[in-house]
Amino acid sequence: MSLEGGDSALTAAIVNNMAHEFMRQDVESRSTEAEHMLAFLDQQLPGLRKELDDAEQRYNKFRNTHGTVDLGEESRLLLQQIVDNKTKLMDLQQQRAEMSQRFTTNHPAVTALDAQIAALQGAAANMNRSVAVMPDTEQTALRLLRDVHVNTELYTLYESAE
Image (tube, rainbow, N blue to C red; front, side):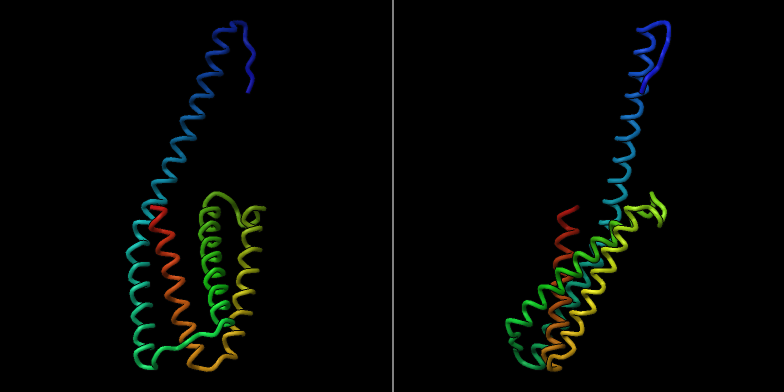
């Protein structure tokens, strides 16, 4: 920023006041953003906890009905990939929601997030096709366990952000 004037002390004071005001507004804006994020987390956390509890109950009920299902190494690896993919996807979707409040859908940052989201959705579809060729019992166990792991990751992520 620059300002020209006959009185250098007055000119410097005006520029300094403008800079301080800009910094104050920036801090205030960031503070408001943080408050909104905390309010959002406060709203989401009880629902995530319930989803986690429900997923654990469904998995435990399945295990009690069908006995312990031992997932093979390939299934465990696929499960971890699915959980990681789902966690990343939800994180990117949250980032996109935040960015869409500030930018248009044509903004390069939003477009980049859309591309990353599409890539993760494609990867998820491929992983779901891999699950579909497994035996029915293993498919069900994997899906239920996936729900438990994803909900645990999300709950832990949101709880630690609070």
